[in-house]
Image (tube, rainbow, N blue to C red; front, top):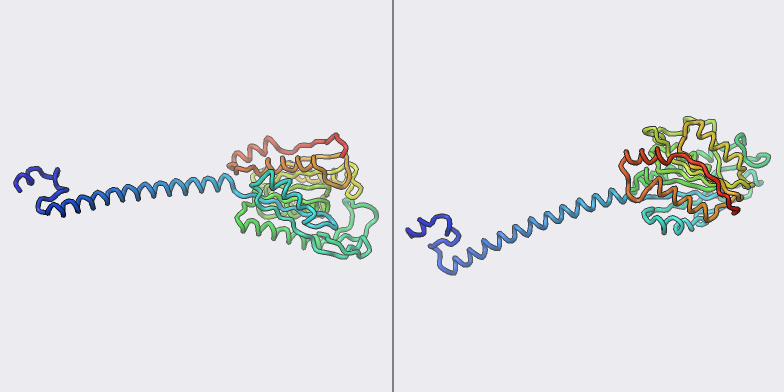
Length: 304
């Protein structure tokens, strides 16, 4: 006992008062406990690293969504090709929403019933900046589109990663609903359309769509031979938006009629990639990018 006492802590792990079997059991238990604590600590460290990586991945690859409104007499199914044109090329656009307009008895066509985002009063000739408009049905549709956007945000899509677009009637609604939406959007895409309810500007543009001095980017595409929505009306609409301070407009014109062609889909995707990149950029970087890539104009020389 005296020797053990003189040895002190160096042999404390094997007390002499215990029999050999007890000593062995105590040694094994102590060693196992130490090993278990090391394993637990390592596991907790791995969990922390995995959680941090997942959070970083979620922030960098946040989901994106496209809402696209069809034209008069059409349906969302008529634009189902966007699942291929956008979804297969830009898979991070994980939600592509193609709603259907309600069926209405259109006054301009003698009460003929067809899908329409808003009523079209009787008029002489094609639409113009002074054509009569049905405020009730327009406001009803704008409210519905705002509800669709709210639903996407509730599902976890950041509003600034949502792009709203449309063709013809759907494009006209896109401008009204998009510019008046109270949360910042990623961008607006307008094919063969025009600005309606001009008397509501500049109040129509919600402050969220020009926050920090940056206007929500708009892509406007129109055919120079459009016989349904005059090319001149689209040009007037572009200039009208510019007059009200909207300085981030990408304008593309094609020698074609009232339709959309494959080259336009390519421009569409490039616009989507610019305004909603796969990896969410910090606000400062986004502002710098917007400053560099702001409004532009272009012509497509090929006949389509």
